[in-house]
Image 1: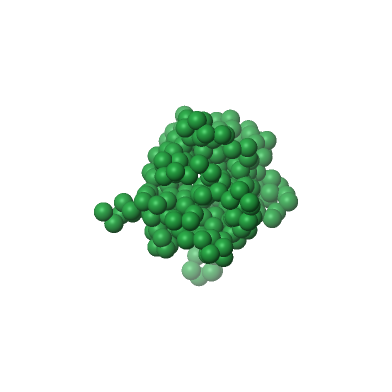
Image 2: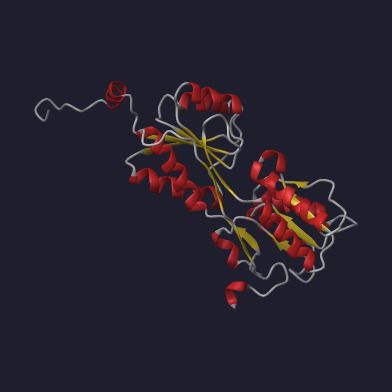
Length: 294
């Protein structure tokens, strides 16, 4: 091999062994601390399992299903986040024998599922705001685009019903990024019936809401309470610290990769559906003293 300069052909080896040595990861987009946290968990577990990653971001791509179908021929299995591709495609991949793990999305066929608890924590967080005397709370997010956000909206509505308050008609629609969160919050705060609190479906929306509050000259939390979701690293360092719901981002990614590798290696055949717990992190943006300072 040294004398003739031979180099193994990875494509030919994969064809002979029916094994690519890679897993696919399908995310809406690759920016933002939420996706970074999940990706780090996937990468750590994949590295431990000796697999490389092939990553596709579907945001702005009109033919996401086609791209993922092409990806499926180059990997041994795929992890799919949220509503990035259709249920029909996921079912087709499974019919072709490709292992699939779904993140933040209901089950399709025999695919493994990893989700986090959302509804109960959302109800508890909303009740917490109501307990502070906030009877006009705006929900900012996009439930139809995200099963997790839909559960947060359901918990938000359930808390109003449980407290005997009028049920909100609809959420304030916003993508899950800071710039869209700021724009949505500006619209809400300009309303004659301005709410006294904002329930933001993730921390990036909440960060945009902080900016909007400053632009309106509103102090947090005395003029406006704000809560988020995810507990990204920056949340505790905002001024004031952001009350939010902690998701185990790294654990989500690591578990998804481990389940996928078990399927690929044939060490498990039975489908797994896991709901990881979440935790409300009380800081000062809701009007409380921070739990982390006590």
